[in-house]
Image (tube, rainbow, N blue to C red; front, side, top):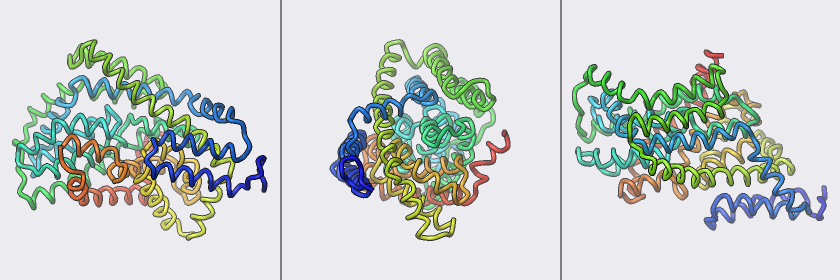
Length: 435
């Protein structure tokens, strides 16, 4: 078939994908790479650039996407409001008594903090700045401490409220955000458990110290102190699941609640700090929204050129075994995670890979959890692993040493990923239980 400007369909696909990959390899900012490759593709098809603007506006004109800035704001306010130390104390009361106690505290604290920030980067920066020096002071190796911090931060991507799940729900065509939120709890706990097993084995081998003895009195005390922070998650998740309000409404309410808790209850923020936090939110949100806008154009080009159908035919042509196809989908996502950031992977890959996943019996909600964990692993891998770089900077450890120390934890995460892939009930139990 010949397109308007005399360029064949196959040539247009080549222009789109090759220009995108070249710009990625040249280390262009991802939004520019996505946007410019889309421009080249549209021009090759003889379409006016006004089409680009229409697709960009359409991509961000979604009511459900309004939840994204609210969740980001909630996370920044809570993270800046002195919540980190309280959650660390609660985690210490829960698991600090175990062998390698501070590693266990790090992992459990990330589970708690993830339910507030929804960001692996924020988790690594906030908890890592406190826990890594604390662990080193108590006799833990600095590379091990950093590796535990960055891998456990991925729990925050699975534990609701995660703005990445909202992006996936929109990209997948309006999947229930409440169901995705519920689906993340058990996988997040499974990931935490697998990382704790890995930490325990290493801690036993290296004779890392235990913490204080378990005290139910101290646990109750720390829970009471942390209750106001944890209640934000209850408001969001149970509000959405219970049908009291939409994801966007619950996110807006959570922002107001976070502001009140940070300023008036924990008093970790003054009004000057609030304005600084809002400035950080604007910086983060501007990156996220331009990615969503440009990825919308890129996705429309892919659909127009029938790339999802071509990809489906290519993958299913390798094998008709659903287990092999499921592994191939994970490998594709892991590869993309090595060269791209999380949001553009979700926005670009979901329309292509989700139909393939559903064709072999993978539920869209289950696939969303698989995609988020795959992208989370990608955040820890060179050459563009954002969380890997943040952890290396916070821990003041060379990236090469961090990667080497992270190898056993990569194995823990891959095992978790395979369990989520081949045992759907792990992701779907809570959504099915609560309808």
